[in-house]
Length: 103
Image (tube, rainbow, N blue to C red):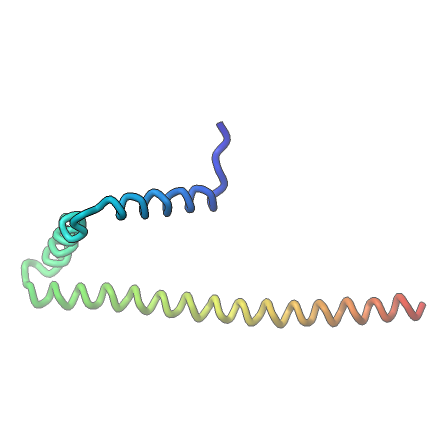
């Protein structure tokens, strides 16, 4: 059986997740184990100090936010570069067509 393309697998996963969440009556209860595990992880990293654990948690999410902002900036720069290159390619095609027409 052939493996579906990555885009199809991603869509199938999204569909399954939405259906699963639609059937969930108590969202807080469903996510409680994950929240408890995250709390335990930060507390362990802080050697049991809850204040330090809270700072570690804030640092973790601030780092995620920074990475997201950097990624969005790079994506925007890539789109701008692509637009410039497309424009330059269009200009080059027009110039080539003029050379060919004049020959």
